[in-house]
Length: 256
Ligand code: LER
Ligand code: MN
Image 1 (cartoon, rainbow, N blue to C red):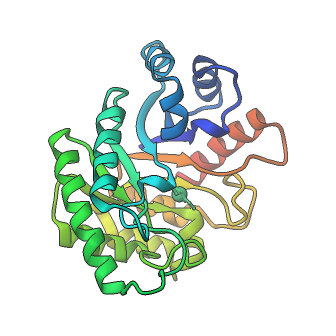
Image 2: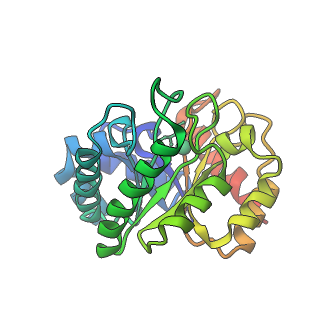
Image 3: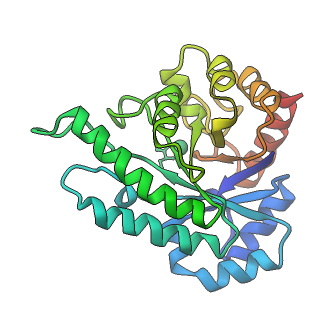
């Protein structure tokens, strides 16, 4: 497994500098941010070619959410497909997919929303599979979405869609709110988990809040997880580089 941070939290005034900082802080990968990478794809590609840091995951924006209320679902599917193609040029294997954010919209039934999401995911997943990539369904906590809050709900959706292009991810910040037992959740989901987001209870970097990372991380290791764990958090209270280094050391210590 590889440790990454989202590019947006890494200090540095160029992609090359950010990748160097990540490497020096003990990371093996970077999580690309769709909007940021769209602004400088050539610079990103060149910097990656010149660095041992890999870009195996891409986080998407709210306008990729496949069943947002009022959205044109086929346009959303096309956007996700274009994003998969765009991301593939950097070596990305997993693209994050949030179904919908916020409360259930007025006049929409949860069943129809679920069916709409399933269909959109099946189409996008087929395209992902053709590129040997995966869309990873991200459960968010109840204050951010109403549809998929727990990892087992994401797994049930992936099982239902049954595509090699659809898998699941788990975010420790959301799991800390929604799951009764993080380690058990990870054990149960097993190989469905293809990607991880790391943030502490207060959404600072791991080690700066009160989430107990050890049991979940060790469950992940025992499950044979071979993906990326990406920091998605604010960094503090020290300088960004110190915090990145200390979180890498903290995560490694919790894994053994
Ligand atoms: C939002 O809370 C989150 O965790 C992001 O990964 C969504 O893309
Ligand atoms: Mn996340």
